Amino acid sequence: MDRYEKKRRIHAGRLERAKREKELFDERQKIHEVKMQMRRWKPPTTTKVLMAFIFVNCSAVEIYRMVVMYMLQDLSSLYALISAVVTESISFAVYAAKAYNETKQEELIKLERDRMEMNTMEEDTEPDREGAMG
Image (spheres, rainbow, N blue to C red):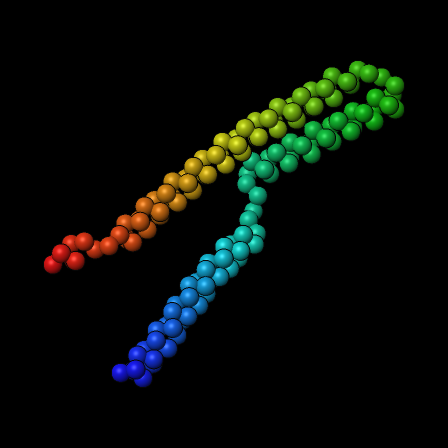
């Protein structure tokens, strides 16, 4: 019996190590999948493209008006310059508010999903009381 018990312990130890190695492999695989997902190129959203267009357009107007004011020594085009800056500022404020609200909603959805996963994991780990009672 002593020899049998020794072999059983050796086998149980190997089994535990194999289980730990499998858990580590699974964790590494999950991390790898997340990293690969993060590396994928995502096209910019429509609002980002429109924001870039507005910034480029307003910046072009500002530069053009500044050059015209310098060349002609005339401040009459200052109105267009001011309106371009105001438009740029307002559009950025609207974009920032929209992006903040979208990010907030996404984080709330992720939080809710994580809570649901935790609840299902807790239910799965509870002992089977009905099966134990017979």
